[in-house]
Length: 247
Image (tube, rainbow, N blue to C red):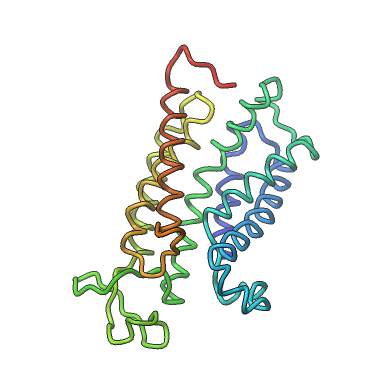
């Protein structure tokens, strides 16, 4: 995870000049996004498994046992960005005269590829920890999971869908797309494309996942992904229409 955060930081710093962001502001932004993202990632996970943590409250703080949600990280990171943007008044020379809405969209466009890069590297930890695997399979790319790491009810199976690998491959494609369209001057296009493509990927992967949390009979993360896909798709369509102005 440290490697993922470090690579994401240096990639963001490398791209900062294009967005008129000073090195000092880059460090401030990334630091607070990491803090907010980490807290948000843990809170989302705990709320998703509230029944378990209600009877094991001490484990809420035992993050070394796993349990960080990308959705929580995105929400926490965005909230942190919005708050610190107001408090710290980042030095954003190229967009200093832009409306606040445009400014936030520019920041999100800058950060989106770094988030994907961090996800790609961070997902490798699932291999080392035997996490994020799907239903049993017997295909050439199957993932072996030692018995102590197998989920209840699947102790007799040895090989499973390597969902972490599927997500890595999908995120590599998404990163290439974001860098390709990164030359666009339409604020928000990169960030919304990330939200659209990643959540499309995540929606389908959730149906292969054994431990996908359910709420009211629905796969929680699949439902969240679908909602984000719809919102991002509509927003992307809107900002790409020349006569529609971003507020």
